[in-house]
Length: 272
Image 1 (cartoon, rainbow, N blue to C red):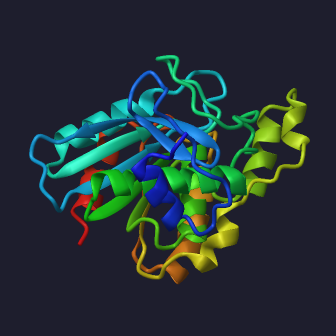
Image 2 (image 1 turned 180 degrees about the vertical axis):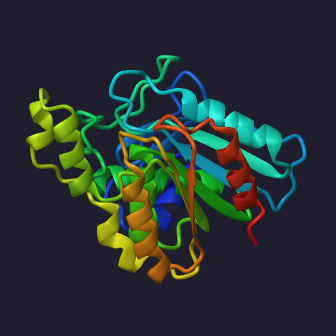
């Protein structure tokens, strides 16, 4: 079977990939991003007032150990509706099934911080490049919650020119410290003691683009990813990338739909 034109273009712009992007035309709708991992599902939402210099916002959900994630779509829809000249995409991470029964190819893992691996990061990078080729935005912002924030933080370190800004919400940005915290919280779950191949965001700070704009956002009552993890990461990142903004807001871990976050997202979209 011949590769589609977009897939051929992807091959030309993915110097780090040795895998041919998947063919996704046989899926049940057109919103699939071809990557070396396979096809990743997404929903795209466009503001009614869209020009050739639009902003693309890519939204990543968290590890979602007990539910099928769909809130990334709802957040993307709200971002597109409330911000002119904006296109927002909710992306379903590799191996996950959403509440509409779409499943992205790849390995989900055990939701213990074990799926921020080089393979997963490369697959999501490829998906973002595909979206950029498809929609031609003037700039791209990456927004992640919890495990999705860790992935976003890894991506801006490993692929420093991929996006122009990132929002890290409830981020387990020090992976080793966070996993020890969760091992203490879930002492009955032996999986937290297993070694992982995931990349910790704090270990790739030195590669973040010095002009990268980053919002670090966390709830003051967050007992899953404690605020100190966001505070310490933001302090370290600000030495590398001065355009780092730390916001600690009232609320717990599920702060992804908080109105105060949408205010900060609006500011991000207006960044020059």
